[in-house]
Length: 364
Image 1 (tube, rainbow, N blue to C red):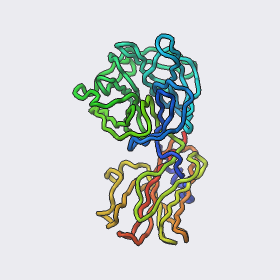
Image 2 (image 1 turned 120 degrees about the vertical axis):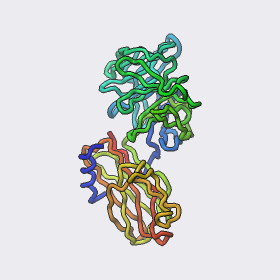
Image 3 (image 1 turned 135 degrees about the vertical axis):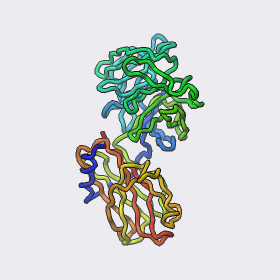
Image 4 (image 1 turned 180 degrees about the vertical axis):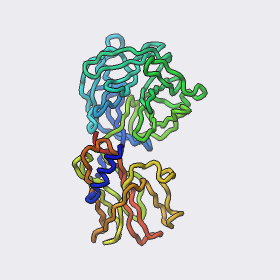
């Protein structure tokens, strides 16, 4: 997120708020026609609802819109369509017919890039979202490519035999990132790149993939199977982690520019002083990987710091021990991701209580 968006949010912190309906930051679909939300940290998911159109085989976000491929029928008579997916409900809407069996989708400028099945030599192709024509860029040289993602200007695919491959977007030719690794036993049908730079893949579990070594690391699984595509969700908020000192955080509101999110924590001492931490990273802070266990530093018990501290907003708990801080979301902050955590004076060891944390993902 650019500095203008961050500055706009900072100036709005004079009045600062989301109870997470879904504690997952990914939306995913399977071939059977179900949509899920998935936690990219743990790999655990939950059902979002039926898409209404089974036969999904890949997925990609292009700007505000999520696209997926629908297959109707099998074999030589199968029909295929480009669909759009509702970010909040998972419902699929048929868009345009397409003529190829696509196994991976990724954003490519104003069009989609895709992997088209081509027997023993799959092809990199370009797909127009306006009316569906497909342009072949070139052969990959690999026979079982599933999934496609754009990471730091480079396209990566996953071959069921070779594992992670790097694809030249001008010619389609692919090279094995690490011939010594292969798939490392990971079953992967989709790839996606997160805003924080992580490359994830999976099918019935979620893996994080090191694009330098090609090695997949298992995050976890649960409540889904046979995922064929996953992308980041926006316009949602959720809590994560655990609080200490009996303090618990909730988030309520609408995560869109011009609306307000309210962060509220319960379990604080009555009328006690506290503050809200707001940060733009839940991965690192002052060189330390997050979360950071604070017990050895502060003398607390089971307390963690979950967010970088880019802004601090002072506040006071009310007579019921509720500490509330509203956060107006400024205009032109679409796609902004930020994290919050409450801290208050406490009778607990160390004299401080820390809430669990919350993440707000502003709609695109």
